[in-house]
Image (cartoon, rainbow, N blue to C red):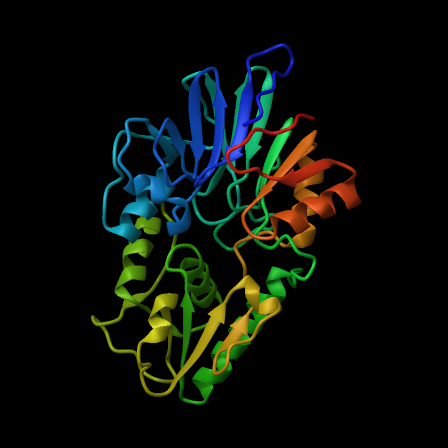
Amino acid sequence: MVDLSFRGGMPLRLFWDKGVVLEYGGETLRFDSYRREGFLLVSHAHRDHTGGLRAKGEGRVYLTKPTLALYEAASGRKPQGEVKPVEYGEKFRVGVFQVEAFNSGHIFGSSGFLVEAGGVTVAYTGDLNFTGSLLTEPAQPVECDILVLEATYGSPQYCFPPRSSVYGRIVRWVVEEASKGRLPAFYVYPVGKAQELISLLNRYTRLQVYVHPKIAKVNRAHQAFEVKLEAETLGEAEPKPGEAVLVYPRSSLTYPRPRRVSPALATGWAVRYQWKGLEAFPLSSHADFTQLLEYVKASKPKKVYTCYGFSRIRASAIRRRLGLSAEPLPEGGGFKGF
C-alpha cells in the first residue's frame, strides 16, 4: 500500500479490492464492490456490479432510483442495509467525501460518481457509453484530477459501427426472418439490452414483441419511470410465427428452442466473434476503443486508472495517443501521484 499526500492533505489511497476502493481520512468509499466495509456506491443494476447489495454491511449504499428499482426487479430481493437513492447532479456528503452522481450512458439509470476528498477530485465512470441509444443519453464527461475508467472494450480491435446502422441491420433481419414464417429471437441481458431492443422493435416494426417473464419484470420497473415498452409475456400469450419477435435472457440459450426460431445475439463482442447457428449484431452498451479516448480527452484528467477488460492495453493507448499518465488500477495498493 502506497501512502501519498496531495496538496498538503492527508494520505489518499485508490486501489482494487473486489471493486474500486477510495480511502481518505480514515474512511472508506467503495464503488461497485462485492465487499461492504465502509460506504458503497453502485453505478448500475447489472449483476456483476451489484454484489455489494447482496452482502451484509453497516455502511450506507448510494445509487440512483432507477438502479434500485431495476436491481429489485431483476434479483427479486431488497438490498442489504440502509439505502439512499440519489439523482444525477445531486451533491451529497458521504462521511469525509463530497460526491456527485452523473449519467454514464450505459443503461437506464446508470451513473458514474465524482468524488472530492482532500482537494483532489476522483471520477469513477462505472460502465459507460459515450454514444446515445433509444433509452439513454451519452455519458457525461466530468473534469477531474483522477479518472477511474472502465476498459471493457479498451482494445483497438473493438470499434463499433454507428448505432443507427446496427439498428437498421437488426430491423431488416427481424422483418426478413418473420417474412419467412419464422420467429426471430434475441438472447440478451435482461436489464438494459433487452429494453433497448424492445424499444427498437416497437418503433420500427409491426411485429408483436414477446418477452421472458424475467424480462417482463424488468420492463415493469422501467415503465414505472415512464419508459414506454410494449411487450407480451411468454406463457401468458402465444406468439405466432411470422407475426412476432421473442426476447429472452441470454442464459436461456442453453435451453431447447421452440420450433421455427431464428436465434440472435446483440453484443459488442460481435465485432470480432461469431457464434455457430446464431446471428450476431455488434450492439453494445459500452463505449468502444475510440469513444473511450474521446471521453478521456473531454474529462481532462491529470491521471487515469483503468479497470475491467483490456485495462493494460487501454492505459498504454492513453499514454501514447493522449500523452497522459495512465496505468491499470493497482490491487490493494495506492496510486503513485500525478
